[in-house]
Amino acid sequence: MTRLHIGQHTSQDDLRTDWILTHEFVHTALPSLPDNQHWLEEGIATYVEPIARFQSGFLTKKQVWWGMVDGMPHGEPGSSDRGLDNTHTWGRTYWGGALFCMIADIRIRQQTKNVLGLQDALAAIVHAHGSIEDKWPIERVLAVADKRTGTTVFEDLYTSWRANPVKVDLAGLWSQLGVRDSPEGVLFDDSAPLANARETILHP
Image: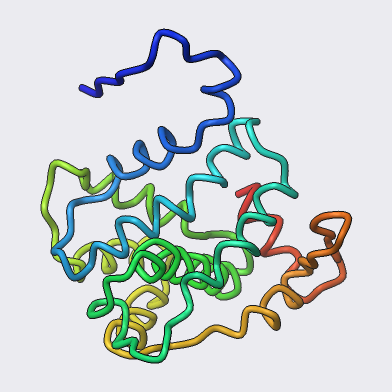
C-alpha cells in the first residue's frame, strides 16, 4: 500500500507539474540495494522520471531532453572520484546513476537495433518479483536486466564504472543523438547517427 500526504491547498496544476511522486514511485519497482549501490536506485529514478511523465502526457519531448542536457553534467566524476560505488556525492548518486542508465539504454538500443531498451530491462526485474520490499545484490539486478535484453551491457558498464572515474563525452553524445541546446530551446537533428535511439527512448 502506498500512502500519500497531500496538502489541502494542493491544486491540480501542482500535481500535474510535480516530479517527486513519479520519482518515488519508480523506486518501488527496483529491489533495495546495498548502500554502495544507492546510486543505481536514485539514478534509475532520476532517469526514468521525465521519460515516464512524457509517456503519460505531462512533459514534452523538448522538456525531457532539456532536462537531460542540463542535468547530466552533474553526474560526471570530479578530481577525487573513485567510481560510482565509492563516491557518494549528490551529483554522482543522482546524476551519475542517471548517466549510467542513459548510456546503458543507448547501448542496448544500439545492440538490439532499437528493439529493446532500459524499459524492457526494468520490466523484467519487476516480472522477476523485484520490488523495493526485497533486498537484492546489484549483480542479480544486472543479470536479470542483461538476460532480458540479450546483452551484457549492464554488467560491462558496472565493471567499468564501479571503481573508476569514467567520464562521458557529453558534447559528442548529444551530437550523436541529434540534441542541440540553443537560445530557442532544445533542437533536434533527425539525421544524427543515434536519432532513432533518441526517439525510441521516449517511444519504446
